[in-house]
Length: 229
Image (cartoon, rainbow, N blue to C red):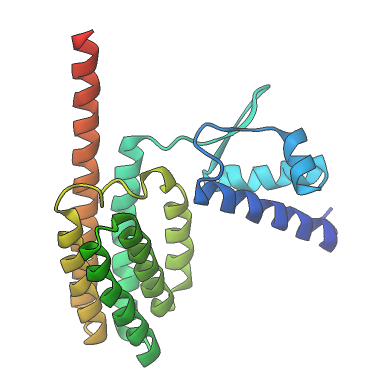
């Protein structure tokens, strides 16, 4: 029996709130999601919470364990690299379609966001730069008018919250990133889909490589620390 419209909307609202809390980092990796607490905080029934958790489980954002309830899923370092690799294919597709479908307004917005980036680097505001980076990628995806790519990319990025600032904090990476984003925006503005696709693929390949290198450095540091004990 299909849920009543009001009940279905309650599930959707609870799901969106919890999803937003996970993506924003308000709910952290491995944090337990207690049904009784969520019922009270969101003001909905346990049935609604269970249905919302089932959707989050399907998205790969939480893990539900028998007799242990649910918790926010911890994405491993290796998974994070693979997620960026998968995003590379999808966002390259989005950039290709953005070059074909972007309006003059889309291109003006992309150029305006791109123009903010060197100012943030000059100010040493790398976290602000990272936020600007995210806005630029989101705007490219919107300009692509490719709904399936947008949905899949959104689902993948939702799992990357704890790695959001990892690569941009690597010394020298911000200037490389700026050059990569500049190439993407120029290709889209020139209505050159092949160049836009190649530029985006190159950019995210560099992100994946940097993320992999930082992961390896952290693992080596942990091994050295254990040996020093």
